[in-house]
Image (cartoon, rainbow over all chains, first blue to last red; front, top):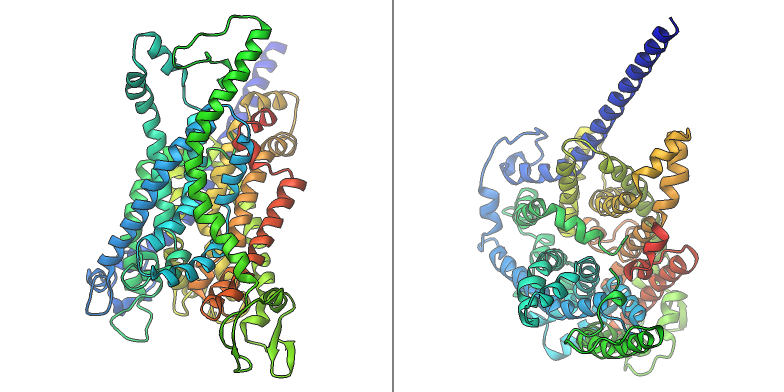
Length: 294
Length: 343
């Protein structure tokens, strides 16, 4: 009899535990759904509005209604004074060159910081970290005067040079944490197996380091692509980047905020980034959090 | 694997014979040769950073002690420029302007009268956004750390607000908070969101929380994942409640990562510019220090340089307080010494 109650008790306890577990997992799913909706709804709303006829700008219907491509035509309409194709090219050049320069310098510094023993390492890391936290306005003011005197306002270097001030530290910092985690013993193993130093570097280290460098390049590019403060002060009509253009957009009706066109421009600028982020999600998360905890 | 444990010379040189003394000599020599290589690798980056950061900052400090040339907007007299002493700093810190009858309090509405209100706004927005982002980010991180189907989809979705350029985020929320916009429609309100102080600030705070909480959540999540599951199992066996496990295990163990995340976000929020600049143009009590500097640049850049130097110092002091008194040691965790603390 006592054994029977014991099994009954055990069964009851098990079912209570299972019910509790089910409830916990339901709660997790509800929370996850809330987070998902909160993060994606505003983005979804931007795309819906981008495809909506301008006459229905404030229509609260949550689906795609009154669908049109007109807003995208407005965005690229030179007649209305928008030079969005030019702005896209400008952003591509500025962000691209910034990323390449930062990586060219950053890879070597990060290798030394991750792999070599030397004095002042702590100091160098502190300096790099401090530089990445540096307020943009503190360098924009003197650079505004300097570039005005040099006649550089409206040139690409006037945007690329200040961008490097925050992209290079980010690059060094992220790459250092990545490089520290790499299995460098493999290089030695390849040497023992008869590789020359060059071969060991090409065949073992490069394939291992490539994902880290690539992820860092994505982070650097997104950072430079999204920059607004520096570009808003040091560019002119010729070099205005997309973020600057979006902040001061012209629509078909004068003196009226062209919401649908702005949302269309925002969609054009954002979609490539979102695709990049969704494809490389795992790597980007690793890159963002590298160094912060490890 | 630490570098010390590796064979000494990578060019195939002789490995020093075993024995404590020789080993020490080897370590010392290694440090020296590696030091030379490290210098070669690091100096180019340092030179670049010196050109793009140190040089402008020194320039700004020199400029901040110069008078601005041109017409004085208040008195209408011509100012020749020249050495200003602490004039520009006094102008901002004490909100003193030059008038025909000598220095006096800057008239309301001029940039000179806004330093302390901009400082207040900056700190107010920083404290509120960072507090909200920490709490919500922690909750998001806890959810994301659980094992459930669709977890990687959630982690990808969370990155979307982070990836959208802040300028686009500002325009998006400006549209959502438009008078006829979806926010007023959904909640059956008719608030002029950008028309007065607190609605405008709330709109900026909501937009900022939406955009940057995911970043915070991912940093905290990385901290949570370092905590071994066995610790929780052991606590469960010992009969610790969920709340006890959170306060006794999760919080203390995640603290280093959390402090670094809060430090990063605080310093970022203190230089907030894009969102208020685009959403409100700094109107209705949303002028941050960065916006004030930018507005001043075209009026007189020597005075703007003084203000940007003050802003830089404020952020530096906050960072110092964080690292010194709150133990947010980002450098230690970056150089790997934080590891021991976490484990």
